[in-house]
Image (cartoon, rainbow, N blue to C red):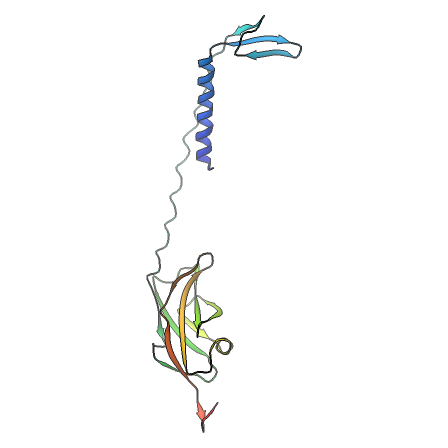
Length: 181
């Protein structure tokens, strides 16, 4: 329960008790061994207590609840700009750069994540220029020449917010006499 609801409940209870006391009529005081006893029912030897009007204090209206923070607009698009779909990269180690584009731009709480040949790479990126290193390539890419890339924007608490369409590209390595170098 928030402070506003608690204030309303307390005010309602106070008003109810004040109205109940006035509606019940008189209050009677009698004495026993422990001292005075007050009751709404008369008893032998009890006297009516003259009560002043109830002292009802209205609490100031609670401040209005703050307006919810405007949520950032949802991502409309996410795409891989390079390499091009069906394009070729030249690398002997597997290292290469890729460029992505999102609309709107990446928010501070979000990051880019990459899937290479269906395997999620461990690095999160904050820039639209992403670098795939040789270790990531070796861990994720198959030996084939044809590969796939997909990029997602993720938020730590919510997970994946948007994913790009998968992109197919080719990796070529330099060879000498038919042997890879």
